[in-house]
Length: 251
Image (cartoon, rainbow, N blue to C red; front, top):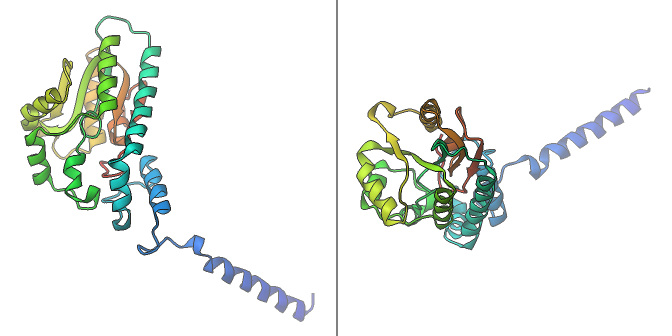
């Protein structure tokens, strides 16, 4: 191959490389470039855990998240998860010895904190424990209706219901009051963080508590939560059901 052909080949290769490196598909969008389509894709990445750990909703997606979480689509998504959960529950052959269990998270699973998050940008502001604790103490969170329906159906089927939450033991009275005001009754046990659980990642804390239930002889057929850390780890349920939540992430 003569030198002219070699030079031409090199120029073509460099031109191609320059074009590839300049393609916008290789660049993440700037804040100004973020559209509602991007925000919908971001929500999908969050729900599937492809986004990994994240701290808050992107500024340009706040309106999108507000519209989603306050609207018909969120309700419909929760209904679909509830219906699939119930279909699975009806397929389970219960032993009938009082050891067939279902585990529920509380926040954004049985109770909705949307009224609280409306005031803090639907997840744009960094979590403030003091203000959230004041909200918990108000016992004003409404029921997440599809899961209230699921909860009652599971009771009718004969499941023992365990509530496993990241809330702390000192919030027991407010939490129980809120649950009862929202229509929940006759759970088997409400499990909250003790002082020795403080600082544990949710995935570790909840795995430990599920293992304790299994060591007591309970069979955890189903588990419902809005965070993957509610569902993953060890001593997991036979089937786990993830509720949507694009407002915050808990490891």
